[in-house]
Image 1 (cartoon, rainbow over the protein chains, first blue to last red):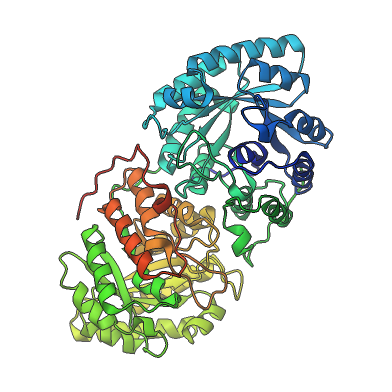
Image 2: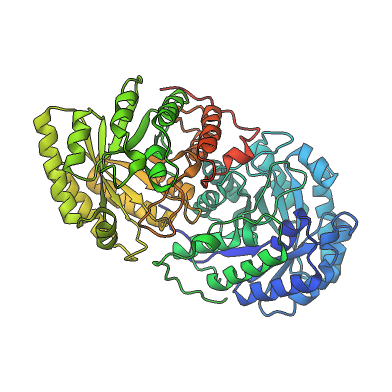
Amino acid sequence: MAPLPQRCVIREVGLRDGLQSIQTVLPTERKIEWIRAAHEAGQREIEVGSFVPARLLPQLADTAELVAYAKTLPDLFVSVLVPNLKGAERALEMQADLMLVPLSASEAHSLANLRKTPDEVVAEVARMRAARDASGAKTLIEGGIGTAFGCTLQGRVEPAEVLRRMQALLDAGADRVSLADTVGYANPAAVRALFEAAREIAGERLCCAHFHDTRGLALANVYAALQAGVTRFDATLGGIGGCPHAPGASGNASSEDLAFMLADMGIDTGIDIERLLALRARVAQWLEGETLHGTLWRAGLPKTFGAIAHHA
Amino acid sequence: MAPLPQRCVIREVGLRDGLQSIQTVLPTERKIEWIRAAHEAGQREIEVGSFVPARLLPQLADTAELVAYAKTLPDLFVSVLVPNLKGAERALEMQADLMLVPLSASEAHSLANLRKTPDEVVAEVARMRAARDASGAKTLIEGGIGTAFGCTLQGRVEPAEVLRRMQALLDAGADRVSLADTVGYANPAAVRALFEAAREIAGERLCCAHFHDTRGLALANVYAALQAGVTRFDATLGGIGGCPHAPGASGNASSEDLAFMLADMGIDTGIDIERLLALRARVAQWLEGETLHGTLWRAGLPKTFGAIAHHA
């Protein structure tokens, strides 16, 4: 058995992937409270929003303000999603630590969700890289490959196609790449196989796994990815989220359940789970009427849970 | 990576572990319908009930009738739970294929749940074995070690203690042993470590893993157990169940979600998942007002799901 890692990072994407797919528009001051409390609970990587046109996602129109706030918090690595060069320019201007550029391995999903072909996204990444290098900003570029395990529109997505896109993103200048099961089609065997193959191509530049819990497999998939050497996982508080263009997709991996699973296996995430559960309760109040997910908030921590959270 | 098995068995325990912990008393004809439909859906191992005094579990008072019915179905392996010699004598009389004798590795849980110490259970297994051998019946004896990963009453349960109990059960004449996370305290790393150690002691006689989804880890734990060589898993349709003496425990691994995960990984369970989902919908109607669990019934099968169920 390959040893499990000693440390992992849970990247909180609830403020982006979570909020973009629900009706409730959370006021900026609530989001700031969320970011502050997540940081206090030990979270050190947060995707605070998305630089998309406000008419498309009014929920995320305050992303610049959130980046500016988040950057005032010590040791917080601040990510934003950027769908195009214009978004990237805003991320560079705001000195975000990382910009995640989504690419859908499924052509059908790419056209529906991003209104671009995968090749066009790769070309855009090359322009972003040029802009980043010219700007002198330190913002990292992550190519995030979505629908990597299949797609509700197109069905099967070939692993070879995913790996080809990954290579193309790296060639175009992405600093990092990640794989996302956007619609909850992955299973642990597929996860392990694809991440192991991806790691052979990208090495340490394969930085993150993003799973949805649509069919209850998010945590099993995390365990499989851990065994393939992945040490960073996207998750959302209360498991909120899904993809509006992927019918049936509902619920990201829940940050608190994931933090519990990792800590209970002796893997340090730096997260104080009690604090994270308290934050979840507040966010659940703010989002009253929306569907939240996860199990730990109801069951509580086991009597045997003894992991001490170490803040990074 | 150790290769995953080609075939696995999902042992349906909804009629026992599920029904014993909910209020609704399902009429015998409904249970017979459930057993028949589960068999039609390809399930080949069913724990149909428990030979406990009817005053303790009136929900399961019709176990003898269910064993008699289930034994009429071709290729169905019929299990019952028996807490003591008296129950075992009924199982032998009814020619059940297997009787599962629960032993709690936690002393506190054992006294609360079984009103016996673990040592007393081991002694009872020796008497059951003598009775079985004297009767000429072919009924197998499985020692099922519960609270193997901890306990809500006692907290931590030492793996060495679990393994010692396992050896004692085998020495007393159990044909098989299994490990159960009765209260949902297991995590994948603990599962893999304990099952690997148990397999070194029991070899192929380590026959089954029983997980609860209290903290969302049931399927991740199954994936870990698969890697430790386990090929039989208890589960309940709709994830119903829990232990009345283990506060907070709720929900077994869901049969349909588990069947999906295994099939999607290319592991044959012989189960027709569409039929199983149809049965779940009927059972959900019968149990109106009770809490069912699982995710597949809501999300449906992925477009990419192409496994063909092979009936055993």
